[in-house]
Image (cartoon, rainbow, N blue to C red; front, top):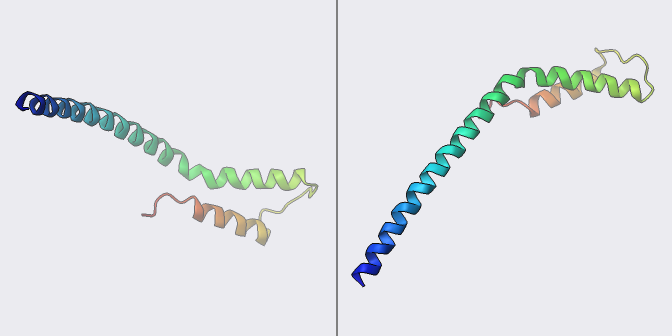
Length: 87
């Protein structure tokens, strides 16, 4: 019984070590990804606005004005939804 318990404890210690290494690697990946997201976040609203204007042109509205209230509202809503600076 003592041997079985000792083997179980040893196995759990090895398992814990492997889990700690795996979690550390995953945290590193998440930190790298978060850095990339923060780097690209400021351009997101600008790109979205450009895509909206292109979609409007494709739909047949040849000259969407950037100051059109509906377009501005959509851009503001998107920027608010994609804001990663909030907790």
